[in-house]
Every structure is written in structure tokens, then in C-alpha cells.
Image (cartoon, rainbow, N blue to C red; front, side, top):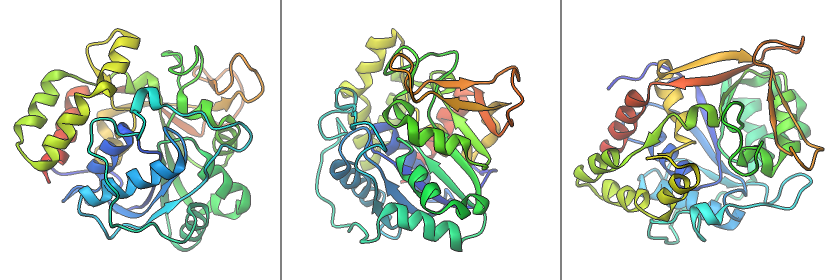
Length: 317
């Protein structure tokens, strides 16, 4: 399979692994993906920073990618206490995988410092945050000059028509650190956003998992166990669906094959003050304001092509 989008652009993946982060990274790091990943930075989110950074190192080790530096970042949101999602992802954040301490070291340079350094020294860099936006917002606040150096921020977060998955009106990543999300969404940078409106249209089903199992590889067996763990059952029970959204993998799928998604140009504002709607993404879908339309909001996905792409990348191991 040939890939059409963003291959030559340098990337920083910012994540909080999490099973869906794991699949996103496994796709991105796969042999033949062609993605130019300069760093993986880690933020607290789905679980604590200590577990998230270990999980990121473990995934890179599973992928045989000891060449990609991994940096630990912010261990709490800008203003709120950390809210985690162990009830979804398991106590270790990767329910279904055998957890181990990888030999792959954590870099001594902090994630925010690495983001600032790379943005200042690498042309046309793309940031790919799939967890709370604390690291990205902190970098933009400490070094406002980097905004002009960022080609695009590809975000998994938010919701409009699909409502929320942590409160009635908020998606988890934005809810955890709405103040950071506001900084990022207000930044003068092109943003491409994959919210629940589109991730809930790409549900992994039993037939997909059967295909992954049939690969009969070490990676296939590991992911089969993960995708048949309690993680897979959580969203099916909560939303009454026949499948499980793999939210964060939409970002990597876009980087590899952007034409499987469709978008609408919008402005997005973040609610930070209301206790009722904390983390709500106010999407100006019909241009009701004169705010700049600086976000490409994903509205649809060719789910069949999405899973063909995902399984192709898993099969590459």
C-alpha cells in the first residue's frame, strides 16, 4: 500500500498511552510507513505520567524502534487536578498487553524543552497530540515564537454532534486540561481535528480483530489480546455500539492517507470556566461568528479504508 500524505514532514507525536495511542504509534512506527518521527513526547492523561512514559517506551520497544527519542512531559494539567481514565484503559493504561519495563531509555530532556527545540530547528514540523494538550500549550506559552514554525497541529480531541464521552458535553482530552486546549486552539497555527464526531464512525469490530489474529504474528497476537480485553467492552457497553472507537489512530491514518477523511473548515473555542460544560468544544460549524476558520474539523471517514490501512500497518511487523 502506498501512502499519500505528510510523509516527508517531520513529526512529533505527543501522547498518553492508552490502547488507542498504542495503535496510533504502532501504525506510525511500522516498517514502510515512511513517517519522519523526530520524537515521542508523553503527557499525563489516560493514567499517570510515570505509567504513560513507560507505556510509550514499551510500545516503541515492541515496534523495534529504539531510534525514536521519548521524552516525559507535564504530569498534571495547567490548573485542574489530573483526571485519568483507568476505568477505560486499565490500571496500567494498556489493559490486555503484558506490561514490562523496557530497556529503551527515557531521554533526560523534558518533553516541553524538546518540543521547543525541535520547532525552532526543524522546518515545517507537525505536532500530533493525542492526549491532553498540556505539553503543547506549555511549549507555546514559554516560546510563542514557535507558532510560526509549526506547519500543522493534528489533534485528537473534542466533540460537536456526538456530544461528550467524559461529561455530557466534553471529550476526555479537552476536559482534562481545557486551559491548555484553549491556548492551542487560539494559537495562530493550522489545526486538523479528529473529534468524537468522526472517531465514533470508525469502530473496530470482531471481524477486524479476527483479521488481526489471523496474521499469526507476535504483534498481531498482542493486539488481539488488547482488543479483546475489558477496554474493548467499555465503549460498547457505554454507547451501545457493536464496535470500539480507536480514536487516536485517526491521526496516524490521516498522516498516511488523508483522503479517507472529509473535513469542514471551522473555528473552535474551548469552555474553561463553566462547571457544567468544562472542556466543551464550541465548533462554529455554520460560520456564525467572524472568528478565523483555522481548524479542519473531521466530519466523516471511509471506515473500510481506515481499517484496511490499520491492518496493513499491523501486518508490516
